[in-house]
Amino acid sequence: MDMRDLLVALHPKPWRVRYSEEFRALLDDTDLTPRTLLDVVAHAVTQQVRARFTLVLVIVAIVTSTIVSRLALQAGLTDNILWAPTTPRRALALSATLAPWAGLLVRTYRRRKLAGKD
Image (cartoon, rainbow, N blue to C red; front, side, top):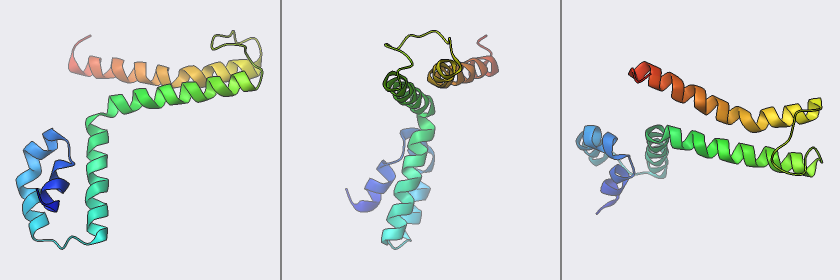
């Protein structure tokens, strides 16, 4: 496998099925400079994220919730990950913890509705 094959292989399978022949021909006609390599790798990463966008959103929600919960614990707003919003600071921390999950639920609902599954 040469460098050009590897650059094509970095892309997600649906993209490769559709574009690999044309992309390979373009790479054959292009000098593989460091800038070109960086551009192709960045494009492949973008396509991988797009292909797995829901997974990326779940990971972001987990990381965000974990960080906010940890900060709330360190700030003394709660002794555990479950707390009542009895003060404005606690309410803000709870909202920040739950907001990514609410966004994910809304996105899922909209996608199902558009797909006619609801």
